[in-house]
Image 1 (cartoon, rainbow, N blue to C red):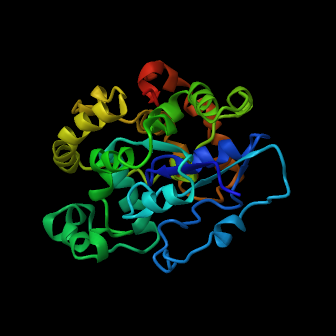
Image 2: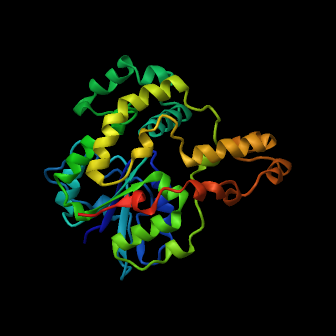
Image 3: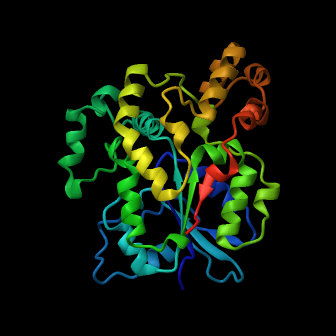
Amino acid sequence: MRIDFFGIGVQKGGTTVLYHYLSQHPGIQMASKKEIHHFDNEDIDWQVTNHDELHNFFDWSVDNVIRGEITPSYIYWPFALQRLYKYNPYSKLILLLRHPTYRAYSQWRMNMAKNKETLTFEKCISTIGRQRVKQAHFGAHRVYSYIERCFYAKQIHHLLNIFPRENILFIRTDALYINHTITLTAVENFLDIDNVVSKSAKQKYTSSSLKFDFDNIPHSMRKKLNNIFYSDILETSKLTQLDLSDWCQPDYCEPMERDRTEYFAQNPTAVKAACFPAPSAAKTSARRKPDQVYTDWLRHAVPVSHAYNNAT
């Protein structure tokens, strides 16, 4: 009795959307909740552990399905991948990769919204801010790891030293937004299941995509982070065989961000409506449907061969 596949990251990389899509597939049984945090749980005695707590999130009476679980911290947290391999060395792993600058900023916004952070973004990514991670146990911190989680190459090196490459699917997060049909087809093929969700699922966005707070990354911070991550992006591209060359361009803008910016520039009356969970009927009627807001993503689509790769 073992779970077949795992979504292992990255945090703020679109794993909630992926969980939503895969939960719709009749041949997949996803864990009853996202982010169980089993293999990164330091309260477990890993010398004598069993996995009953993990397995309780599944209905094992159901036959003819594959089972999956998504916890995006697994790629980052020390020892999580080793524990996962020991649990099931044949697991298939899916890793979503988002432009590191946007990922870092998105994590900070999330922590601010949850009242887990009090520092400005600039201070968080400073030497003083990053010292909080260095001083943490194992040199890893669940909350303050804005920069550290974004050094993908080191984490992928570690991953490839544990799992065979053919067991791993690398996906660009922007590809999942730009063309979810093509990307989900790749996921289904990787998991060796019928192409069902890729043919029927409607475009899905996380709540933060629509409840956007409009404070774009300051230009100085964007430039600083792009410089920090430049060499790591190149190394990540080599390791994953994904074309990430556009991430290295100083004017790179996420398709989701670009279209939101365009949308709200054209629809200023919809700004307030999009910020609150319960807008009035009048404001709701002023908003376009999500699929109308994002239709021009396809004009900026990443080439299919650049969007995902699990080739040997």
